[in-house]
Image (tube, rainbow, N blue to C red; front, top):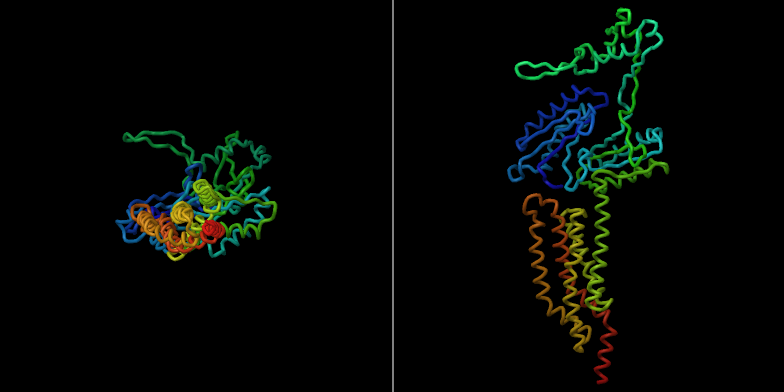
Length: 473
């Protein structure tokens, strides 16, 4: 996790929460965050709707921190400090998130795990989602789970008794206009005062429209000029329904979002989601990833392909250089040694096998083979001069020790600033430096022993043939 001097607090209140109530909660969070001495700027938004109308029961607070050198606590320490403080305000669910080091989709709201469930129809989706969310919520990998498809949004449906309205000389348009006047908050015009322009908005005062029963106090004028109580022609029905339906690849879908507990990676979070889907969903459902999870999955597959391609290119290049298929195999034995060293180094220093350390391992494929090249090439020259495979391998390893040490030490010193995280925004690249230095150091020690032994094994027949020619001569 890179220290980007930025923290985000996501808040979600129960469905049906009013904008005013949610705004009051956001202000409480804002007061708590404002006490941080490390803050530089704070942005709070209630009911964000940057691409449309936002849900009134949601909000976020974005905290811009001072530069790392200007504060004592790190971004991660501040996030862990805020989480229990925010949890004390228990009206809404709140999650303190940090921006992912690599992320191309900011719509996920800072939650790294994004798992999409696709269903052929709405009823099937409604049937399995409660069980799926229950399994995800009790898993220790997740600090918070959320679902974009809600089923418990309270709704008041207004039905007009058209037959009764007709008998009372009312039409639907009169009723609709009266309701719009009281509840819609429609703008009717502007007026200018003291060189400033103000909007003219028509709406009933808050105390007269807070309760559904306030509808009984409304009157609508019929075509005869008589005032008819609105409750005589209108009926309110309470129900719950999803505020919005989603589609993914043209299927009805729901996206399960999750924040991770400390010590868990995105890869582990995706594995947990896939395991839950196997236990809960049947064959009629499909699943997919989106947001940061999709980026992670795609980048992981790309790195594996790049690693295999690097091995193939190095082998083919060496085969063309040595005009042999066996000598490149001897040299390529340095790659497993480097991999073992890289993995041991990552484990020892507490780093994961992430995209940065994987890139470091790919770099190792090209770097560590030069040790084998130096030994094998010199040993081949000695064997052409008539020396045996064993003697050629020993002499080659002995005489090439100095250039191998020089090139390895120079490479290690060049990568050391990456491993030490020197410079701005360099924390995420530490695993890359650790993998390169660890793999190079480990292979440097073993190459001087393993490569000569393997070289002798592969060239035994060639050595016997040279000895027979020498005896014959």
